Image (cartoon, rainbow, N blue to C red; front, side, top):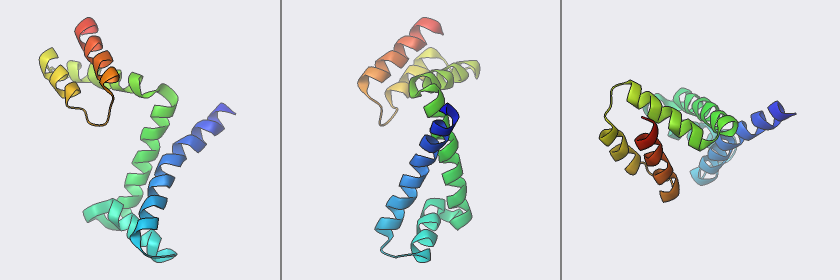
Length: 115
């Protein structure tokens, strides 16, 4: 049952994005789907749009499974393993868009304490 819920939740985000783009495309039916996928795919067109939706599925599946904070900590750990300095990582965390100040502070504390 947990796997089913995870799969439904992970498909939800890309589905909502596709529906949003279809709604605002101004078209109906197949034209709306084509336009939405082409918009999402940018220079790669519809195939790029399908790829973006698949990528969003995997990202949202990971967030559903592990939680955003744990994924962010994993990314930060990988940044450190690639040789980035603490100050550089902290600067990047402070520049992360669309995350709360509380989460930024938690991630900065993680950088300072564990790395």
